Length: 114
Image 1 (cartoon, rainbow, N blue to C red):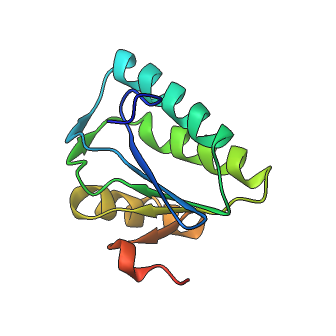
Image 2 (cartoon, rainbow, N blue to C red):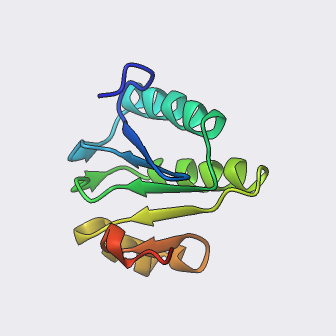
């Protein structure tokens, strides 16, 4: 993982920052606090676009979506779009709670325009 980030694996391709969360189980207060710190660091490093790759996530608690929305809001303040790459059970929950109306969601990174 990147030394600057605790949980996220981050790389830059062109002006796009790609942050991958390589954890299958996103639950618990300690993990949530570490993720919050990484998201704050991500906002300070933002480029013209951020892709958050959550395809490894298989189980999660209810705190994940408010964190994603806060990240999106913080990035929007600097006119930086956020795309979430999700699949499996996380994708199903995104559909059920209609987060696709708020977040740009794709199944694969190659699905992103530009």
